[in-house]
Length: 174
Figure 1 (cartoon, rainbow, N blue to C red):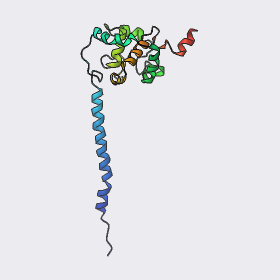
Figure 2: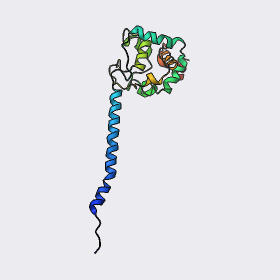
Figure 3: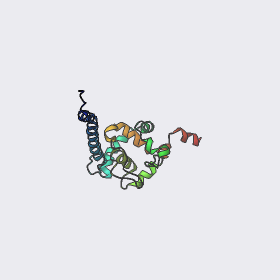
Figure 4: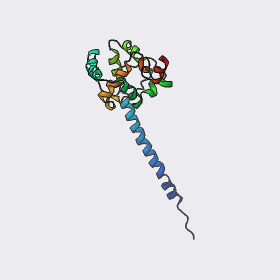
């Protein structure tokens, strides 16, 4: 008599890859939820003590002391800021850089324009502009060195907004 293959044994072994895939999916879901909750902190991802306009300026003033606004333009591109704050996404995904110097001075009294820009970069969850989501990355406090941060703030404070030094702006005025 010929032996019949054990079909139950075949079925049990063929389910093993499914169990492994489900276990991996579960691990990824747990990691995703943990990271999402961490990034959703109201402080903007960086725990901050209570700051006033004066304490912000105690930090911002030294940043601006030797700041190079021309370098700030390059840094906005390097850190990916322009993806949301300039070009076709400006004003759609995030407030545009083009008028930030004027708007920042009145957006969050009693903060100065420089203090507001600093807060927006380092503590993005501290104030959300009406009409926009809480989608500013909360990583810049760790990623942007002080010199770069000063250059970025100085550039954004230019009188004609962040279009001051772009080639398009200089061609329009000639």
